[in-house]
Amino acid sequence: MPRKSEESRQQALENIKLLLKRSPNGLKEQEIADTLGYERRTINNYLNNYLAVEGYVYKDGMYWFYMEDREHFSVSFLELEPDEAAILYVMARTFVKQSDRRDALAQAVLLKMANIMQEDLLVSFGEHLTAAARELATQPEDADYEDVLRQLLRGYIYRRKLELIYHPYDGNEFKTIFSPYLIEPSGFGHALYVIGHSSIVDDIRTYKVDRIRHVRLRSRDQYTLPDDFPGLELLNNAFSIYHGEETIHVVLRFDSQVARRVKESNWHRSARFEWDSEKPGHLLLHMDIADTTDLEPWIRGWGASCEVLEPVSLRQKMLQETQKLMHLYELSAPSDDVNHDRFKDIFGD
Picture 1: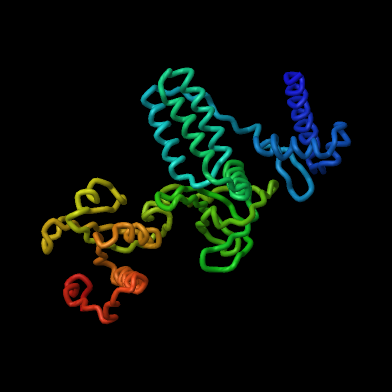
Picture 2 (picture 1 turned 90 degrees about the horizontal axis):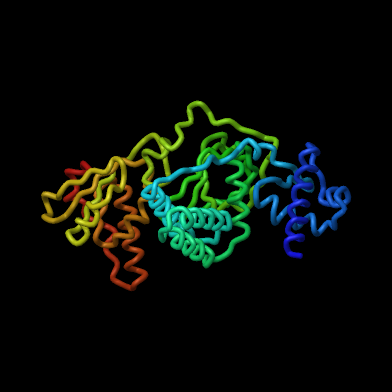
């Protein structure tokens, strides 16, 4: 009986796809139910929990449409050497560590990879990927976030514009028509960002996915990437996400307790190290980056082991932060008059 039920469901799903393919103007759920002879709630279940999840159909207002572009996209068979598969496993683990929410799409990919590796390689990668999928399943569920991410991915894959509502960190919500050019994870803060053209400013903007309140795929509104869009090179000057053509020269001093640890990593493509001639054992890190917004929490993470020398504006910001911390912990606040005489050679008069 379960086998027959499964076959019936698969046939119903196929019939819905065929019907929507023949209906370029879309159909309401009740129209599909009446045509195929099902109850509306059954059609609703098949559309939302199967076909929409798998990317075959989408809803625009009250009407359901077939995603015609899906037939033009397929993933070729991937042959991997065992060591290449190990790299894929490391990438998957990086994603899981970065994720602070449950993600059904990612779970499905991990389990598919696990099955392939378990059958073909006969090594522990498959078991580890299955464990990674289980770990992802323990993260808090957020249906709204999953829906937003799914729509963003479809807009990105099929080159469709999106109507989205965004709530910036320090501003009011706004609505914009958005063309997603890049989807990029941040190396810090478990965050995912989307970069593209925003109609409200008629320019490139970077939006944090967590702050997107609603997304609607504009299925008939295609976009093309501008010829001058640089792709991932856009992020060359970013410390993580915040990009721009102009750069700021940053100099940080690390004490002897963390100097070796800092020097072990390449923090940015422009990073340059030198030992501090004034303070033996201390390390100077030079970087040229577009924006310090995502650098600041990284600096704070090093605590008193990291001192900002340049630029002056960033140093002042860290000084103000230190004063707030002293007030928070009920320590005597330092004078607002900070003596910068020893930095004249660096900052100028």
